[in-house]
Image (cartoon, rainbow, N blue to C red; front, side, top):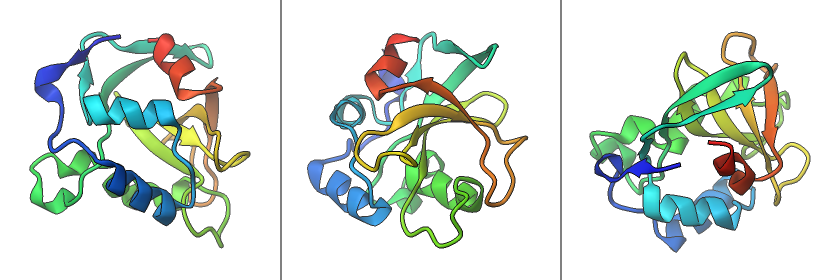
Length: 155
């Protein structure tokens, strides 16, 4: 998989931003994901598709992490912005503080690839979140990979 370097969203995230987001989301982001964002924040793949649940999914772009998304013309692709728009549809826990399912990739047709922290707050699996089938407090996901690196290898 190759990222179109012209589509990377700057500024690139720094360790302090990752630490702040982990604390806010109450999760531990995988090192391979952090390293990926430090180089490819919000980038588009030159060719990115994968199979899941008997269907081929095409990647639009990876989401990004920005210090101040409102001040960036591409801030709509910030993970927090997307999480805020979808939050009640990304958990089945009404009392949740933090994040269970964290969107990281925009797919064509409205779905997202997500890090799934529901079973392990430090070692998330990767899933597709289905926007059409999900409802408030009823997320519908399909398993893709055990790790972020495994997901990347499928592209």
